[in-house]
Image (cartoon, rainbow, N blue to C red; front, side, top):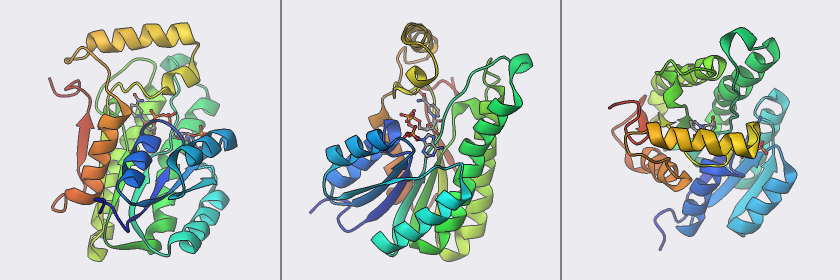
Length: 247
Ligand SMILES: NC(=O)c1ccc[n+]([C@@H]2O[C@H](COP(=O)([O-])OP(=O)(O)OC[C@H]3O[C@@H](n4cnc5c(N)ncnc54)[C@H](OP(=O)(O)O)[C@@H]3O)[C@@H](O)[C@H]2O)c1
């Protein structure tokens, strides 16, 4: 019997990167997962890869009507949920002076407002003893160049992890955050040309205490630890960053 047999897990941003790696570990160990994303082709490919234990739902984390519809779908598919990984997110690089209102709004809406209302709308479906994990970033404690709006959104995620952990405690729901450093998930290639992404990745590896980037699997195992195993932990953040934010 798999470790997660009978568990029902919702993963926003589950069509690639950490979300998909987490979904794969879960279905491999017997869970049912419902993943979201915006791109239908990526969702179809992810569902094909995950197999019959996965449901893929097109849902934009920036849209409140989409989040409401997602909650209805989750209720219809699962009834109640044992873990929620509020992970959907995008990155966006710009110097402070050149950060547009549009970029600021996009980053804060998808990365901060999205998980906040996803958790709010799905909260009634969370089972007693369930775990919520949000994806923040080591950028929330580092003054990194080109990332001021992104970092602000991720700092908001760090803050709401604490507040929601307090407010959901009476229902015995734990809320924690995973804080990745540089992880080779393919996200960089989505926001810059291939050559620039390769250069950025080489630099990030050289700057990291472990002299490498992390893998989506290393984030996924941490997410599942926080969601299921860390039963005396709530409001916390766990860095998966090769020591980059600590050493
Ligand atoms: N990779 C890193 O080094 C790193 C470091 C720190 C934090 N993070 C954070 O980790 C999370 C996952 O990133 P990743 O590296 O795994 O990147 P990824 O492979 O690009 O995965 C992002 C996922 O989120 C989905 N998504 C993006 N915007 C969405 C929206 N508005 N509504 C619904 N789904 C949306 C994407 O699908 P669609 O594009 O099809 O919607 C995809 O499934 C993000 O929150 C990111 O900010 C990443």
